[in-house]
Length: 449
Image (cartoon, rainbow, N blue to C red; front, top):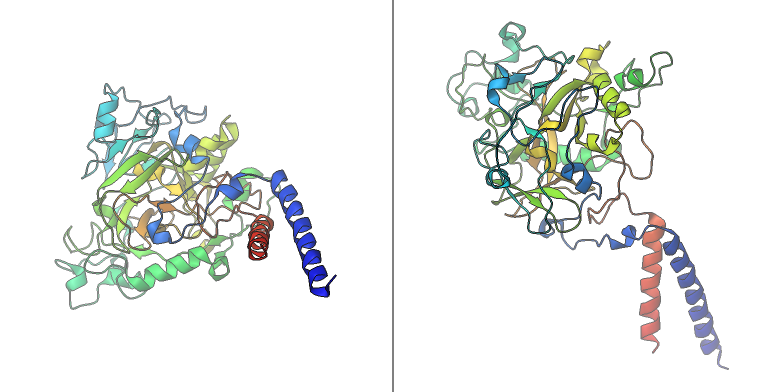
């Protein structure tokens, strides 16, 4: 037989052997890894996100013992709260429970129950699942031990602009608040985050090697787990802050440096996703790059309070609605327990709790925003668009989960990711290589028919 023919037969046999081994490898792995179809263009894809979200955002919240919070319905009575400088302060051990006599039609009309400047509708065209049960609050609320002290006396003249007038962004003089954001304002006159700052935040979020980590001398995370033997701090990402004008500033409320504190200004909708992700959030209008969408709102807890909630709960997944306010922890020489804060939107939160996960290229990114508190123990977590977002496109953020490691410190536990990103972190490299080799085999086989 001709040498070339023998060579071809040998190559086919080798490819057949490789293909069989790939099928065996794939058979022992998760089928979900093959179901994550890579999108052709992130800007045109409306996404697949984490599998646990369906349980995470679609559950009926039952309060853990430590919070003494019974199950509540969407909505909250503003008369039960104490307003302090625009901040809802709930100091009692048991947050107020409101008996709401409303129908599902009321929730569909406005999830926020009139507490936002715009109605946030809710639709489910996929199944018969009811909306999740939680209390809607438009502003963060202190649970119990978290130390959040807002007073005009604590804000020095170097942390505000008392001599400004009108709109600071259009003033000829450099505003003192701008100095807190690196010497210039973070916003454009259209109310968008400037291109340079947005690109910097995106790059840091996508490339772990570009992140600067700050390390606590005594990390609150490790201290909550074990008071006797403290493990070294694993590091906290240093983030760029946005400093907004506030009450002690001389400018008016429509100043261009007051964006997040004015609340939601774009039409949003909570909807049932068709990809098995449960409830999600989408925009009903086109959004430009750098637009403010919403703030992440919840109960302000100390990390030790949250750790106790999670450890005593029979359902760990329900606390996937929690985020650390740790952007400045490593700068502190000594961080007290009451100063190590986080946000928990499990039982009390806003529309941001519906935002689903997407690896690497989400269309939202969170940026710390300083408004009332100059020491940065407490700040606002605001979501801005990373690119142009089309109307009815789902809004997504990166939860920062490493699916390869069992990270006990991460508040959101690993789940079966369905984000659909081409660089999804849950897809194992070996699986991707097997799929590629099978594809090459069929191309080779077809060319020799």
